[in-house]
Length: 42
Image 1 (cartoon, one colour):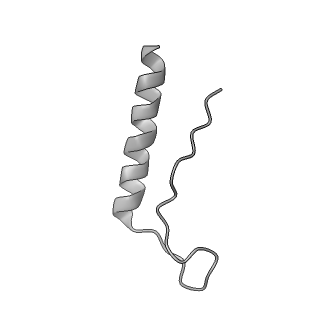
Image 2 (image 1 turned 180 degrees about the horizontal axis):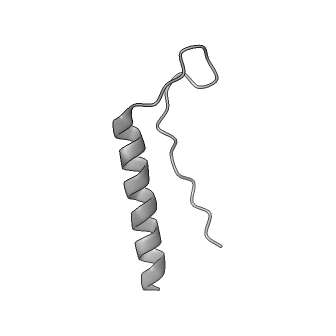
């Protein structure tokens, strides 16, 4: 089972002002979809 280390895209982790921009979440989902596509081609 492949377990890639996917970035979280957040800022100020574990702090009072922790946040993640919407663009980072969109990019993370694109990366996951591409990993799935590549794995399916094998």
